[in-house]
Structure formats: structure tokens, C-alpha cells
Length: 132
Image (tube, rainbow, N blue to C red; front, side, top):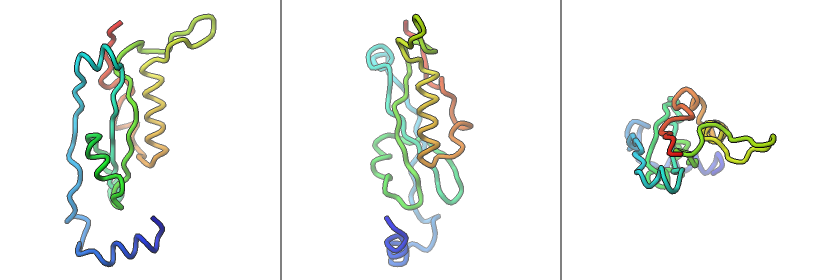
């Protein structure tokens, strides 16, 4: 959406302030044993309120609902929850990517998407369990 479209959308709105908007609610993912043993990763979604830089984890369903909200930046990433904690290296070659490394990349993707401060909000090993 360009600046003119954003202005037209705001100027024709009945809202008098950002505080009148409904924002997504906090969400805490609870992976099942099946998630840990079979899929080894889950989708995690986060948003940042653009007026105060508040970061919130939200459900992937809400992420879809709010992805076009002009007052939020929303992003979803894959999050490794089981498997090796660190990269497994054999003969100098990474043969299995670790949760720490993959989730650090996911955090960098969130930061690049506009969620500045995400590294202080969440740890790369959040939700991780070793089921090896």
C-alpha cells in the first residue's frame, strides 16, 4: 500500500485514534509430543505495534487476519523445537542443522521483516526439547 492509499484509508475511517483498534491477543504455543517427535518444528507468528514497538507473539490464525493491518507489522517463521541443539558436523560438513542455528536465522528474518528488538524478546532455544 502506497502513502496515498494509506492516507485515503485513514482519512475515510471512523476511527479517531489507534487506541480504538482491536489488536491481536497474546499467544503461547504449546507443542504436542507429536510436534516434538515427528514434525520437529512449528510455525510461530509475531507482530509489532508500529506506534510503540510492542512485540507480541500471536497465533498463526491471527497473523493471517492482521497481516494487512496498517498499524502492525506481522511475520511468521518456522521454529525448530526438537532434534540436535547445535549443528551436527561430520568431516567439516553440516549434516543436521541445530535448533539454535536455525532459530537464530528465524530471529534474523523477523528482525529484517521489521520486528526490531525481537532478539531481546525471545531466545533461540525457546520451546526446544531434545528428543534424540
